[in-house]
Length: 501
Image (cartoon, rainbow, N blue to C red; front, side, top):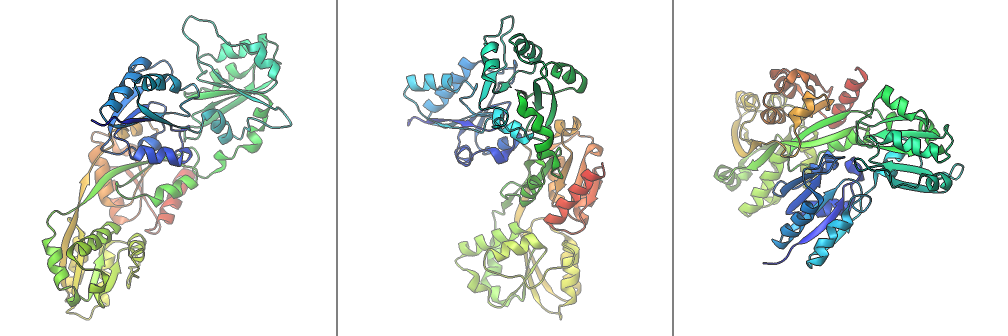
């Protein structure tokens, strides 16, 4: 069997926007992913569904697997011929023990690559408005592990650190904060030297406490802090209030769940991130083309006899044209057929194929599409609707009532699925997710299917239209509806929900 290869990939500090392009490309091609607890959820959500997952923990003193065992797992999985990604929070070589993991691979002739990651020691201060270097204050930055083995003294030369007069960044040092502050002051640091502790930087849980090296411990006790967090000591900490930019974004501090069909890249998620939200993209549904497409192929054989072709989703557009090519025809077979779509997303999917929609309803739902299209029919038209297996019956009812002959053909079905990596139910129960965004009734049902037993009154639901809102309310969610059935309007709704808190 061909020997595999290992990639040590730095996942960055949390925000998926800080995950490197190379890291993402390697991850998407992985057969096996060995990941840490500190890897951001946004990055975890990009792991291929078919990849084998091995969680090794590695957060503070809570390790699911010993380092020696992790090294062995990487070797064994590569020896089986797999593409193995060792996914580590931050950067693999900055206190990530990446060097130790490579030693065993090197000894056994296993090929490997290292994909550097954005380190929290630079990124987290940056997200808090703290430049780790500034020529008015310092000319160096020093990164130190704050982790101390139980029962042992620090192996840190605090005097040397103080003498550098540079910015000091301590990683993994929350539990040792008293010892760090005391060590610095005992080594001669001014007790009024600015110092900060920065919690869960680059995520919705971001929080900072700025004080001095003598008062930081007291302030942490008073205000509270959660791990992971980093400690920054230096005059640059005074710039946090002036340069703090992240909290100025309208959705900063909000973690938003976006449910979507697995195969679609979410524009909704991108727009929410632009507004400062931490977005958790999880597939609630997966759309699968019907195995038996005979009815659609029969329609293709007489495509020129239809006056209207109606699409109710981007997926319907995609499946239709994939099957058309498979049948041996292309858009030239459509002749003078007119095109109706349910809304902007479907209209865009058509435009990407060089086709412009002839009709879009004033409200983007199936009932309005049927009602308003029926009003412009003269009677006797043949209409083809290739769509989901369980579509809105009102659409066809209005058209038939107007005298149309309707071929309502199921071309794909919706399958519900839940994340293997992230416990959505637990996140809502703990109040960690601010709201869920739903773009269809089927995503609401898919979410409910994957979170059985959840008290849905704890879920704030931002919904794109009436049917979606009704589906959310049927489970007892606190549902809100966008003014228009567009992505921009949906994002504005989320902003309004945050403002009204």
